[in-house]
Image (spheres, rainbow, N blue to C red):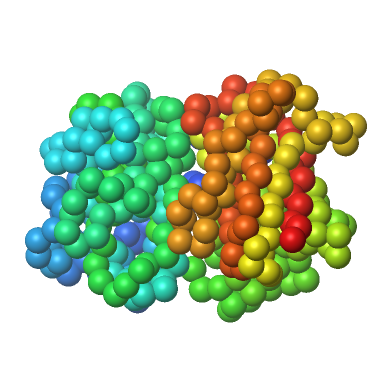
Length: 349
């Protein structure tokens, strides 16, 4: 769950993206900060360096990001056109624009976009996606379209290979708008938590910069809505662990994500939701979400199971191989109220 308190403090729709009032200062002026503006870019209505109107082509035509942006970058798509009309299950008739991201294999990034809250009268529903050098939008493997309306769209990315990728700002509503974009390259292990890292160092942080949950610390630690920031589950000798959290309560569909290790081939997994008294869920109304198991490549291993008698979401997976896994608590539609849960995961041979 995104942190509701930050919503109130930041003055816009969701928690992870914090507005820096100095975001217009020095944009595109500091190549050492990872921004290359050698291209013939122009300033559009005071909103910063201009997005490229199309994906691909000469890299010299782009604002190029090689490491974290020094602050949120302000961009406008008002003078651009609609190049990508769909990506995923919904249409994207808004104007779209691109910046280039130069990466090395294994690089970790975290991206955000919101409508610029300083621009009044915008009816925007942003959509953020990342395309490889082919610029094909068919797979939409790396994207965020989690919020209805002017929400904070964000996602994490691990570069599978060296090369140039293109980060696209689009919109579910027609026309153009003004947006704030943040791009953060993560360096786990340097002892300094970056935006997009759950932690970096300390007794409750593991070597992959994930907050560790165990029997003595069993409540979700925010943020935990993607694989990079997932909470890591440390199982006791009983190989059964119950963790608690809260989903929903806003206009977005971000999941809660947990990471854990299976030590032995042939392991059986049982994931079930408990009621407040510790008994097993007995009504589907308590679980307006799905439990989905993914492997370290993001591929679905199992999911979309419900108990035939109660209608409660659960997951039972037999003969799992030893590996690292992620369990997602997912909901396709925004939950209009915060939903508390206790998730018990049991491993057995």
